[in-house]
Length: 150
View 1: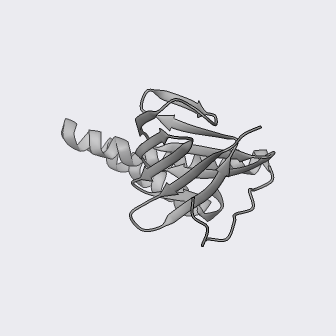
View 2: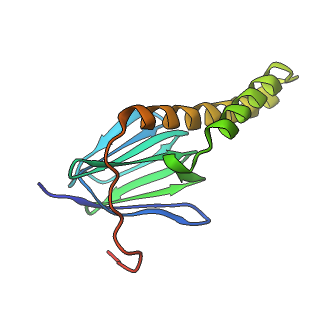
């Protein structure tokens, strides 16, 4: 089976660079699965889980939003923020969710509620990926040395 090249980057760091058999991401239009040799695509991402699969192993990431481009068998994600599932502190994520809910309940106008709804969505997404990753307990992808280019 063929693979595709994948790069997930933020303004601060590179989260993932390597091959994949499949990538599952949360687009603004819904969840999507991308396979090698997929047609060219450019789409916005919403906060949620991204799963990168390679040879039976999986890398689970939280993406807070951004853009996904698939072109010439290379998938690139430019994320607002991203982190590996095992980097998320469950206690801090739960506290962020509680705080976002309290602020949303006390919000005054529609603009403030919209902004706070995004905060709550990100907090819930981070918690969801921690919980699903624990349940899955799948093998993680072994990352290649960082000096490789594709």
